[in-house]
Structures are given as structure tokens and as C-alpha cells.
Length: 137
Image (tube, rainbow, N blue to C red; front, side, top):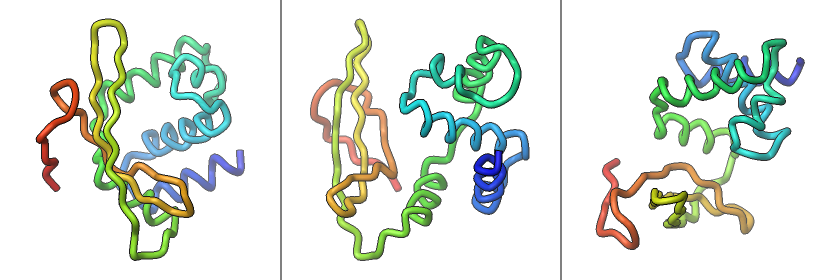
């Protein structure tokens, strides 16, 4: 519980969101670290509170379906938290995931620190394979 309160307080310093949304994000991040998966059904099993896991799963889905995250704002918070000294080494990565007939082509901008890349921004590309797409700032 102490981790949750401390994380929510830290998030509040960086995001001008409603308290309920900050609470959700803190619970989500703690579950993500503990469960080590992005599968929402599995995250729901470890999500805080006493509600049924089906309700927690629906809560996770509603959040990601109905809330538009400002990715540049999140990237700034991540860079602040990581405390990586400047000058940064950046890396661009593109990956394609296929689920059934759907293809997800993702371009990421990463910061490299001590041999580990930390994705800070990403874009969903609208076509398969390499692209001439240049993201706007």
C-alpha cells in the first residue's frame, strides 16, 4: 500500500489528472511490474481493490479505450524519472506484429543507456514493411 501511495503522489506531481485517474495509473503500473505482462486479463488478476477480476478487466479496457494519453508528456516524465545524463544516445526501431489478419507496424524512438534501450515515443505506421513516414514533433 505504501508503494501505491508514493507512486500516486509522484504521478500527481507530473500529470494534471483527476485523482481517480492517477489512482488507476498507479495501480496499473504496480500490477505491470509485478505480473510482467501486458495481457489485460492477467493484469486484472493482480489489480488492486476487492472487485471481481472481470470488473477489473473491464476497467482496464475502458481506460485504454476511452482515455487519450499524451505520449510526449509521458516521454518527458519517463526521461525525468530515469535520470539518464545528457548527451543521450538515441535509437530508432521498427517492428511488425501480426495477429491473425491484422498487421501492426510500430516505429519507436528510444534512448540508449548502459546497453538498454528505453522506448520514449512510438508511432503506429499505416502500412506493412519499411516506410517513408516521418513523425511530426
